[in-house]
Figure 1 (cartoon, rainbow, N blue to C red):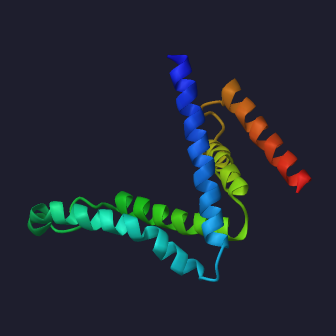
Figure 2 (cartoon, rainbow, N blue to C red; figure 1 turned 120 degrees about the vertical axis):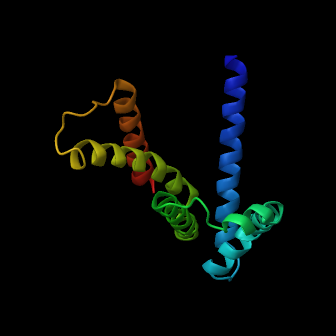
Length: 149
């Protein structure tokens, strides 16, 4: 159902924008330090994590807290934690709009790194028209935002 999909997309965009603006307001208001704001925002996550630890306490006693953790899992956890800290710093010192440009630029950068730098040749998968159009639109929007600021 296209209308339901469009409605869900619009609600998602509205929630994302509201969340970004709220985070930016929270981080830029007041005289508290950035680490203190990060702790305040992580408080709910810590409570949920503690509840999950309590519900899985038998399995944790049996296999340990970090059972199943491999190097890939540790790398993912480290990257996610770094991402959270970087996003809060980005919102503190810039704006939510610039944060929203970071994701598509990261996708574009990852594509070019994986295609040219990591493969050793350019014989890999070529970008399709939608990717090229999306890249051009992101770069155009970034240029328009930068020139109006």
